[in-house]
Length: 295
Image (cartoon, rainbow, N blue to C red; front, top):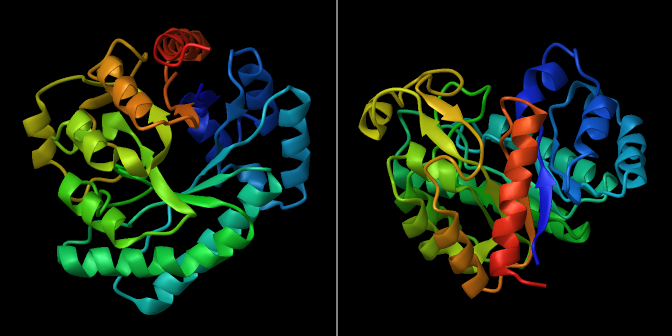
């Protein structure tokens, strides 16, 4: 059966910007959930000090959990080679971070959808940078996972490979035992596309998954498409919410993953309204997982 992890979606500013929450507080809160792991974020303020890395690993393991996945956001589509080389070095440090925490999966992205880039240019730049990181990851037994992403919280432009066709082009360009897909069904809606169609196109490459659910607070998916220009942060008409109550069809998702033999980590990227909501999302997923992967 796949294993469940959680990500501190509700506490990102507190952990990454203003420091009003300590990582140890998040570990303590999360330890009350019925999960086996915590997805980590490279941008936690306290991760700047490498001396903390083994301390956090021990704190998590003392609670009977592990840190399987690292969430980070390299920007590999910048036209300047010196900038891209710096991003490759950053990614290598995040791989080191993942290794030090005992993790197996470290996220990569394509980069920002800069207006001057053609699809071919962007795919080539991103593929070259990811391939430059793969030997380093393989030496540490880390798998680089590319997510069908919407937009990093701190980026100006959306993800270059946000659209299904572009994402699939990039995935098809890289074949390596230490490379796979982190599938996020909600992000496909943000591209105005069908998450099940995307899953069927990449399911043989999926090695991890983000579980979430999304709602449109106002307007339509079509309205969302129109505002994908240069807005910092997430579009205002979107909302994360409780899993099982949004747009995603978890029966369709899990039946396709089961069909391809998926047996890895599912990390919950919800709970924006607090720990009670996150706990309900855990319970929903546990029930669904038991249905599709009966022990």
